[in-house]
Length: 418
Image (cartoon, rainbow, N blue to C red):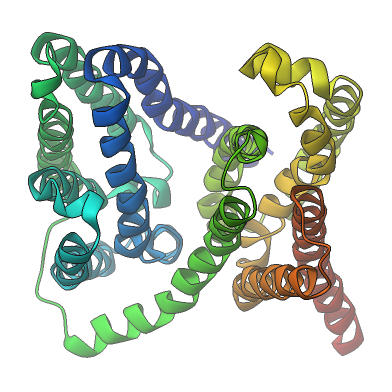
């Protein structure tokens, strides 16, 4: 029991550190965004926001699903320096190659999209910042379940460069300071963490057989498709609503409630992220049951309060003009309810059972269901912000149901064979 409790205490520690790492970016943004909007004005700040939205997709491509596949590899082979070095090298080299490949389409977009063409230097600086950030070996520290090193260093460095924004951003013409400082902060964090990783753990870039590289990249593709699929229908909702409601406050209502959904995801994702390497190594399914038993009553209570006081919550968070967003918050409440169990029963549970393909498939099937649903609503002329919210809630519930089905089916098959 003592041996079991020790890993669980380490799990709790890593979960807390993941929270700190994840929310540090949001916290620093909360500090600087009001300052940036006032100094830059809406036009320049809108330009930066548009570039950042493009870079979000760049980050998705550069991550390539390695945060899941490489984390699992490190967790399973944490006692093999040779294998970890191979994984470390494959991830680094692949991301560098992807950054070179993606640069071509980005350059092309800068030629055909007026908003990007008007300031190519801004796009280039942000691109460098995101490429350097993608090279950070987060997966290694997640895999060995020691997030303290990377969290402390990253947070301190980000804090330093956040302070510099107040120093160097004084006039609208200084807006290049934001991506430049972001790039320098990410570069400093990357260099320091790579030096520490090599000196403390002996992990470094090594020569890897091409066959091993191809094998790992091929095994990571399903994770990449899964992440793309899970992001696709969220982005599609906003795009469709932008076409449906080109003017008026409706898109703002949806965007604000979608931010609440994103906030809930931000709260629960560190739990699943820290459980993933732990479960991959130890297969402690009793802990999964314990987490669900403890959290579900809180989820139910929070959902009840959120449903009853949705209007007041939207007014409190976003302002009086967002009172009507409460209706959309109620329609999206099922999404907020299923997020935690869906995350936990995904990779942290299915991967140790050898059912990782079902975790990936669930996201793909969810995206297909959402896209087909949107098309059906359009054809039947029943498409609206309300029906899109209902469809999104159904999609998330179906994704969770599919994951539960995979687990039950596995248990029944295992019991039958035994």
